[in-house]
Image (cartoon, rainbow, N blue to C red; front, side):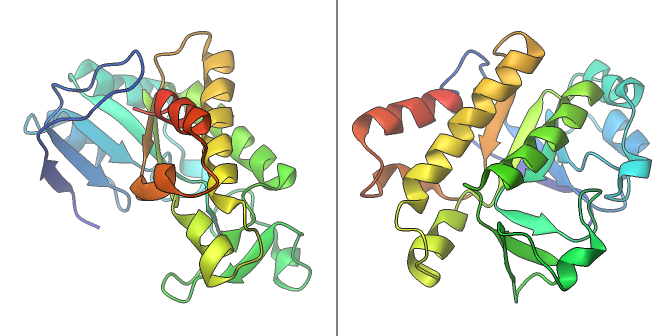
Length: 216
């Protein structure tokens, strides 16, 4: 994918980090040219993969992430919390024939991406391990994809009627985990899609407030 630059009126930050002044931002996940990101002054935040090719062997070093930050940009790592990707470091070949309890069917629109029962502790442990690497690399935050996966498990394949509230709680737990590892609460959490999750029937007013307090 080529570098995509998006101009918004601003982010609405619900936590300590204020992103209201960030307007042009970029999104680049594949065949990333790090020097282009560093040199391009037309955007102020970059959403990128944690690795040059998606694989752990080519993950960016903390020195490389610092070069982006020193160029005056927020460095945000993409992470899918609602689907598993068969090219990631955590994928095991044995899952093709003997999938773990948390692994669901392949997404027909995205070959190699598989639905996950994201409320399962084993899947969440994989995400926390993934986050350990992202935090160690020095990213400013994460861009959490597949927030809207709650809809798959509650409507499309209605296996988990509480999927809406469980996704909110997962995001809140991610906030707490990142804050505990980082030692402060300036780590940025950006949810992708699923904006209407806060209006679902199992999301109580208290849970809605906690979810909004967990994200930027």
